[in-house]
Length: 608
Image (spheres, rainbow, N blue to C red):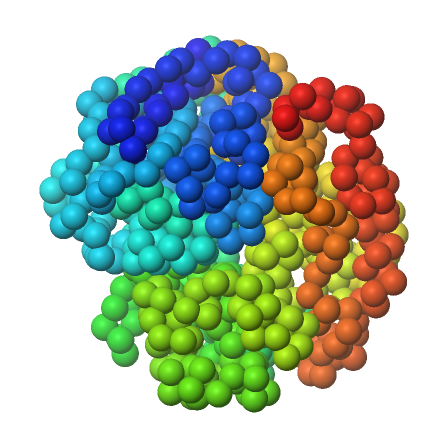
């Protein structure tokens, strides 16, 4: 099958049984790869009502047809599961080199099933498949585990590993790869930890068949050339995602002190140029990327190294904690990576706890003696460690995630618990940015930005406007942007460099032999989006409109400082946005896809 490894690897951890089966051609035709394969298997193989941490839940890792290919950004794979954080759909995109080795080992999808009685790791060396004892790794940080496995098996092996956060079942634990890439959101590392799978070690040497080698070479080179010649290539390569930090600060979108504001008085100390000057050693890219946006950094103060921090970590572990010190943010990043925690969820949850502490809702007895004020760097470090090990009262509380922690504490703390559907919000303040607010509200995994990054569109058309055109833009982005996750390709070349999306069409056709237009691809995206919505409906009785509401902070409490001081989106506009969105999606007033919509998309049967 052109463009694919050709097989699905099933790993039954309970029975220590590893089997391969062919990737069905109709699956590739209808769902293409990546996130498409993930939701397909999740809906069909994980029974309704399964415990996210039970043996019936599965962790599905899928590549796409552009993964590991001559494609600028072809280093992505998708990790899908039932989320232990939200009890809904979880999908996390991971860059690096892992997905290429999957394809070269002849594997499109790895499905992890059951629970091992003892810690193990999965070794894939072309056709050699083994579950090996991981007792010597259990308890190690993810970075230390990767070093140990590289030393044992060789540098050419690619490794994905969890840290103590995953082992201790923190519901927002991540999977780490290549010393700084993550499958970060929704608790995919938690599910891996519950299955007692410490790591996956993989190497492949097989060829991937393509439909038209000459056309493939030309289309791949055209895409690379477009990236290298793009006007923003040099600046993007120099600063990566940190280029966003100063812009967000200026427009009032930089989360500050638990999203109470969107501009930070010490923001200049954590901007991209400061980071580049003070701590960056070199640039670091994912598989085959001509514009390496990763930054490998060294903190002299702490004597440590880390990939990053990326913008999201700068926002959530920096300004959102009141910390304006790039070395401290980098160290917080390193701790989160090695301990195996999603830095977005961890930073968000710690910020909530800091606000609770400053408002007297948490005492020093509750914080295990920490002076948990905004700006206290050492307290932030201690909180990260406590979460990973579920240590003390504070660790046990914050390891639940912000939604459950606020439900436990009460006292009105839910009004500033920043999440949607139980997923902590990523690093864009949305007090008066209605498109971005709607994107968070309706995101298929919870409050995450990568499905529909619309904050720039707010500024283009008027950030406070509540109009059908904004809703249509969000829906288009939600159908279009995730197709990069389906194809196994990074979206940042299109987002940041302005690469013509039509360059991907001849490349995809040359690889697979199937002609698809972007209209065809967006139709697949629309189908996947509705499928993931129905997964929430299936797994959560009473699911509906109320689950899409943002934190009251964004419609009740205007920022007092910064570019958006005094600005707010009122509650009536929040509801109006949902009304328009549901209507345009073909969903009912409660946000459930109608039978007519499901029938039109030919997916009604898929949800049973």
